[in-house]
Amino acid sequence: MIELGIFLALLTLGYGFGQYAERRHYRSIIEREKRLNALPAIAARFPPTEPQHHQALVIGSTVISVDYFKRFLAALRNLFGGRVTAYESLLDRARRESSLRMKQQAETLGAEMVFNVKYETASISKGRGNTIGSIEVLAYGTALIRPQAADTDR
Image 1: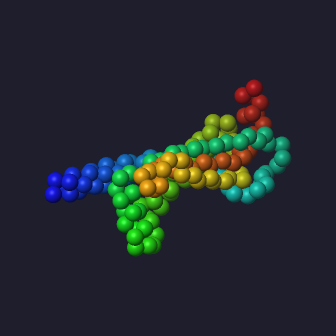
Image 2: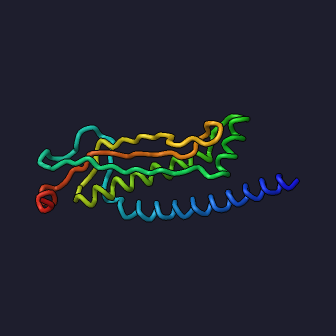
Image 3: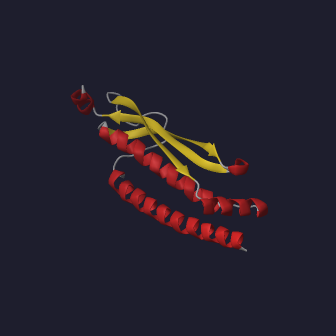
């Protein structure tokens, strides 16, 4: 009986702290997305502007760990099948955060836009029973930098 109480307490704490951290992270993401919205990041393979721009590789990487409650929900979902929405929000946050970090690096370089944007996702840590422990999302693309911005950096 005590073990069940401890399990339920840990599950409740994991849910509460996990929801709080996720909401806080989403607020931060939304705030930064509004600020960096003017810097387009597109998936086009070739630059849509004149070729006199300088180009640079820009990246953004994010590693997010799965909390105990999401792992529990995913295990239940594996029993019954269907969408694992607990992991979907985790991946959404990681993708958006990586994209923001990539855009921030491009903005620092004075880029007008980022093109040929790609995403890579990897499970970098395994939990017990080969469940997902942590995931990494890497966003990368080519920044188009105004020649005057690139020349002043030299």
